[in-house]
Length: 196
Image 1 (tube, helix red, strand yellow):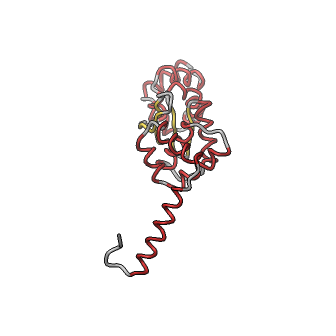
Image 2 (cartoon, one colour):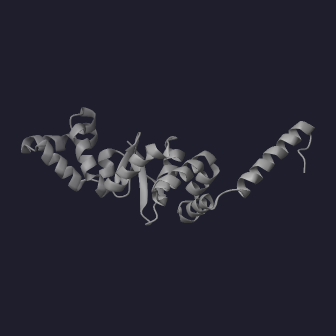
Image 3 (cartoon, one colour):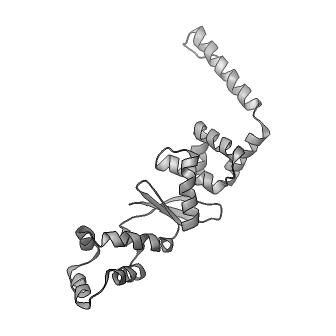
């Protein structure tokens, strides 16, 4: 087998690279093989799986991290999705976002909010509303003039209004996000994201 239409030097270069590749895979240690196979078998999202397996640098980063730290398939899934859809980042940088997602049910990565259930966003929304209700634009977006007059006549406090909104309005409507599917974790829990 030769590279057609190319010089003998190019063919030698090709065969040298091919031999190096064969050598690399023939000498792969058992632990690395187990990690790669585990990722391939355990990751639910086939697109993320293919992304990670096609991005050799990212796969190598996961393997190196896996060898020295505790990491599960969910964190690998999150890492792959963030790198594919948001921005390139190291697994160490991604770990803080993952822990935030795991502990709170949501996380903010750059301009994106990632979450599983809008009920997990109540505290987040409460904090955002505190600022939003100081903005004329947000007040006009969230309420019509009659509602604003009613709040004023009834003496509704900002905190009462926030409580009422969180209990009676779709969180996605308050935050003005249109969520899209991002990934599924090993427990079959689906996550979505929206631009904020």
